Image 1 (cartoon, one colour):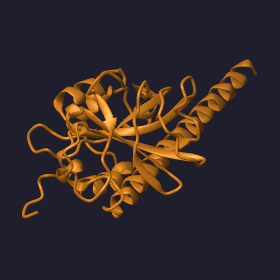
Image 2 (cartoon, rainbow, N blue to C red):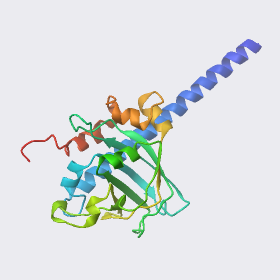
Image 3 (cartoon, one colour):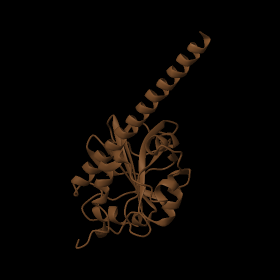
Image 4 (spheres, helix red, strand yellow):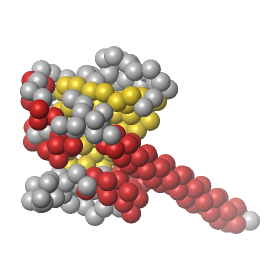
Length: 232
């Protein structure tokens, strides 16, 4: 009798674990879809969104969809999203790695219940910081509000020399927003759900890990903004 009880207990534990893992995987998949939607929408209106030439020049991109209002007030937390970086050889976008964003401030808060955030990492120094296990945005010349419009090359503002350009969207309003003090951390649990193994963001991004099926939509949209495209 005790043996049967033990078997039932093990079976119940396995079933609970499977349901939990399934729910976690579904959550990550839905977040990937939301990230794809955010990026697609903010690039669909070039006169009001991120300049396309900046996306093509970026070393990495960070997309954090659906932050709740006030998520970036100091002490409040947090948002979840994904990063992708370009390969050194062919400049193609890497498989996505998961991140958590905690604390920090967006400076002026646009009204609304949800805020989407996008960061463009513009050089190798910014990429190295982004791929560390934990990185807090701040410091002179490190992060700046990104320019908005069709063509950033016509803008000569010094902020274009920043390592990271930050953007925010709320209630359809998209703008370059100063982002200081936010901490970006690896989301180890989401990475394990996505890849079935405990992988660091650097391992995923730098080792040309195979793109998961769940990321097909997001990667397809990012690939449209690859500098590998010719004749443009």
